[in-house]
Length: 202
Image (cartoon, rainbow, N blue to C red):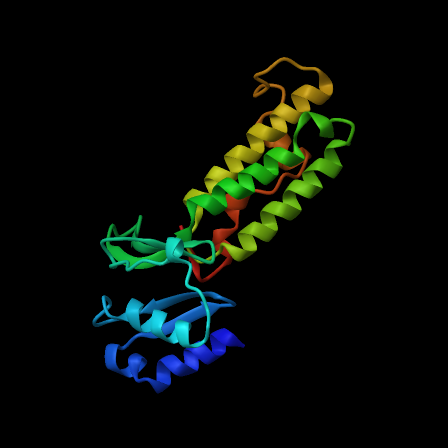
């Protein structure tokens, strides 16, 4: 409700029209996209917030100039991207590094030594559910690099889990090649998913 009042105030004070400054928000997270006078927008924003008796998180607040700089919002990094096919630069989004690390940490947690009493089907089912849910959210823009990183980590962790469960010495690439992990154990292939989304590109 407070953020709604802030957005209404931003428009009523004429900031949106004056600076072509449009607000994009999710709950209390927001980005102000300005075409002009970006240096003046933070002061105006703080002024309205003060009137509403709200406190601005200064550690997360900054002016970012695109395309020279990048910023993170709702798990995505916004900034300059490059088309692998055409080689051209454009403004777009990629899954942020923090979110890639977060899903990899979650995969590690589900394949720890304390999980070896579970059967392989249960572990793979949990990994697939996590990875598919993550990929369903991160399906915009050039996602293949992030998908490859998550997929590699999942394969490595699953091999380590199988090694600990069956008391096999590491490395186990020969005992558990990709065909076994993906075709027999049914570990999802995230890198095969972007082709099914018209709005996702590799």
